[in-house]
Length: 338
Image (tube, rainbow, N blue to C red; front, side, top):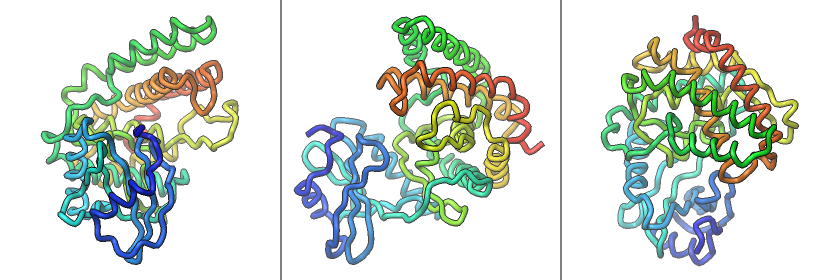
């Protein structure tokens, strides 16, 4: 079986046999999220659940176990996540063949709608999560985040080498932004406050209802690192209202400052320790690193983004990185609330 293959009816039945979820009413494929983790929406007379195939048993089992301990810790503290269901023998993960599986309770919520109230709720939820997970830092698996990844530097150099002149120039400018941002963050990195971060805080992983967070999902990238790395990536993701189907020429280059300010206000309001001056200084450079790394990895793996080649995407990416670099102090001030 290929890891991204859809869940088969027999596979679903054999996994469900490990649980007592009530009388089955319906099973539907659920395509959102990573294609590497196929899912199904399960409806029974006792509720609605999400079944997910995690990974082959030979893969990062320790990492998956850590994620489940993390989810249990957050659930026990009342933090909004999709609650894992226990199997008949009180396990949060069951095995079938070469794969592991989990079932969580379904959470009704809507995606982020790029409003200040929702951005503020996202920032507040992140701060609360970071504070709850500080105690688990030493248990977290060793994983690289987006900061200072050597494979990304090699990948952008390879992409430039393989490209025609115009595209090569774009990759070279992207590499220049990445190098400068890394240098700026590197000298501060070891002294930044640590926690366990979500690692992939974007609008698809934060479900809302009435401008409050009802669930944070998909903790597969959770890792121990400075909290400001998670926050900076969140700022990047939650301040870009890029409508699906909109041509690249209409994608906004500037960050929405109102949304940046709202997310910063939510974080600062809830965090036990407000972002200090060093963390605030690093935010623009970390935003640049996060975007550059995402673009480089995606283009190296797939050759395109949203079915668009690098010759179309790179001019917009460079313009956005230029904007962040040119408005460093404005970004810092609006996040700090000054």
